[in-house]
Length: 241
Picture 1 (cartoon, rainbow, N blue to C red):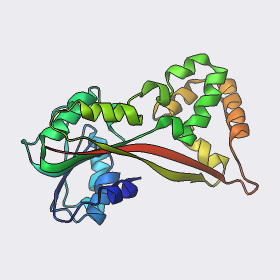
Picture 2 (picture 1 turned 45 degrees about the vertical axis):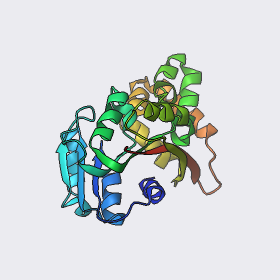
Picture 3 (picture 1 turned 180 degrees about the vertical axis):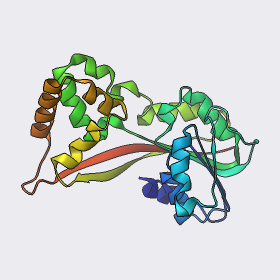
């Protein structure tokens, strides 16, 4: 996902970059590998994620620090590219986050980000379709319902509300998400981390077994056991005026 996003941006070398909500460093690492940044900074509220990011050899020289997307710890007009990957929908005030991203971008620079289109993330869509058929309350937890921001029109409207950004451009980014077999697909739901795994592990054992059985039946499992799924994200970019 990060590679396709950066190919779309087609940024020249020797720019100053900021990754907002850098997490464990997937996007920042891709920037370091392919964009030849002059400066690369990243902020994230999770110290644990930052510790993992710092272990990446590609990020050995990156400036990674705790921070809030709603109050970026940088002066105005600091970066040529301010980016974010799969993070904006988790910020309590995305309007303020976009304003902050624009604030620290230099005039002529770009603000760009991408978020999952959860309705088109087949890994999750199959799980929630079954969960909601067994438990109507599950609909309230489905990311496709909880994150209306993760749609092309909503992202475009969000950027349009920031006066310092020129008209934006959007595009869909699609990737394959294959699994070698059902156990490979199902095991993340047993970890308890995240909304869907936490919901799965909260169920009584008998209900969880029925959920597992019906999800298995729903998935397009090939004769060799492989499961070929796909996922889509929406990306948006705009120039700082």
